[in-house]
Length: 226
Image 1 (cartoon, one colour):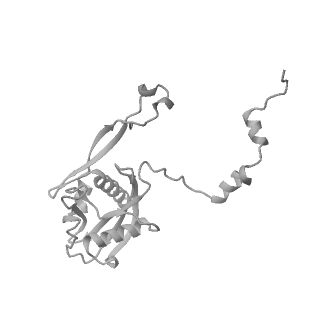
Image 2: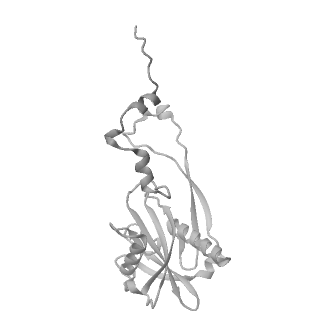
C-alpha cells in the first residue's frame, strides 16, 4: 500500500523548475504591455482605408465605385487595401489612395487614424482620415468604375440606417464534434451584426464602408462639440 501523500497540481507545478529557465513573471513585466492584442478572426493580414476629404465650396468626402468584374464590383468604397509588411495603416492608406486615384502621395495629408473593425473575411481594417489637395477627378480604370463626392454636412444631417442580421455557425466536414459537449447537438451562439446604409443620390453606401463612415462622422460630431 502506497501511503505517500500525493501532491496537488498546484504543489507539483510549484516544485518544477521553470521550463527552459523561463521566468514568466519577469518576461511579461519586461514587455510593459499597455493594451491587449487583438486575436484575428480570420485572415492574419490587416488592411487600411483612407477617408478622403476634398475641399470644394465646403468639405466633401470622396468615394469610389469598384470596377465591375472585380471582387465586390459595383460596391461603394474608400481607397484602400491590404497592408504590406512593415507598413503602418497611414502608409497603406496613402499608398493605396495614390495608386487608385492616380495622384501624388505628397498631395495627401493624413490627419488621424479613426477606427479599427473586423470585416466579413475576418480582416482587421483601420480607417485613416486625410485631406487630398488639388484633386482633378482622376482614377485607375483597372480598379475604379467612377468616383463621386458628397458634402460632409449631408452625413452630419443624415445618420445611417442600421439593420441587424444574425449569422449562424456552419461547421466544416472535418469539424471534431466528438470533442464538443453534446456533439452535433451543441448549440452555437448566433452572431449578431449591425449593417449600416446610406441612401444617397449618387449610390447606396453600405457594408464596411458605411460602418467606418458612420463611426467617423459621429466622432467628428463629438469633436465639433468640444
